[in-house]
Image (cartoon, rainbow, N blue to C red):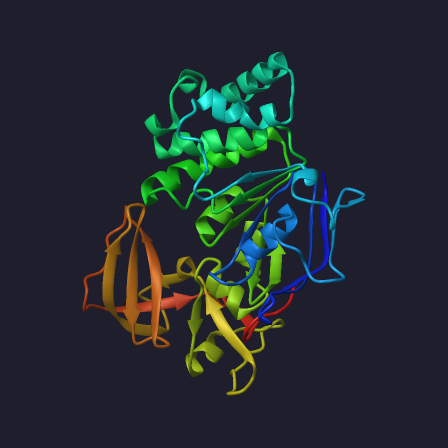
Length: 344
């Protein structure tokens, strides 16, 4: 199913504008993440798609060629996975998964067949008779996903599906969730404030800020070509280079050197992996921090616009804190971006 949102806006009774007019299309079988900081409107948008919130007049929601804007949540045939999973503690895994099918008044044989199918797909066969309280957080997450999928919804919505898990389990399960969603081949939208989660799971990410989508694209497109300072800083945590040195580093098309002036409305950004400790580098600073991150060292260097970070693979030796280092940044790695937010 293809989802198309046209002019979606939401104003609450107290006058708060949670969503400004927003457009978004999700293709059949595509997994799209709504990514943004708290209060940006992503959960409100998800609830409007589900039918749990009513959008402002003039908003339209299309499921393929069907206008579902005025349909109730029950009639939209949407599957939902919540942060809390909302499983029934007094029921077994099999009973939890089959609950929605029972409410649809399907035959006992059809319910058993569908439940068995999703149990196998979610690798929950051996836990089918257990109570959900006897499961790990990751297993409960799979049960919640299986229960949402079993009724064969037109669209799957997930609200911060991994937020209830601890950090190590969340990282392990995000890849598992991506595999499961693609196995089901269902159009899906999930809300998150975690950029790593969005980039690991989604085919496309819609970055939101202040009630609207400011840029959407594949994870790589957003990382390589952000359209604003906000997206550069939020996706991948690009560093803002300040001062005259930033302008001297910036090479515009044609090789012309350009010095940024105050009030130009533009900023220079760079990713940590594009900053190199280089004996021949033109910039000099002092090592302030060295943090071991497992796969790499994160090195903070002060005295360069005013501070920059760089990454060094852990197979290499890291510099000592307090030591002087020279740094080089390739001009083509620099991003010249407008201040604030551009609109998608």
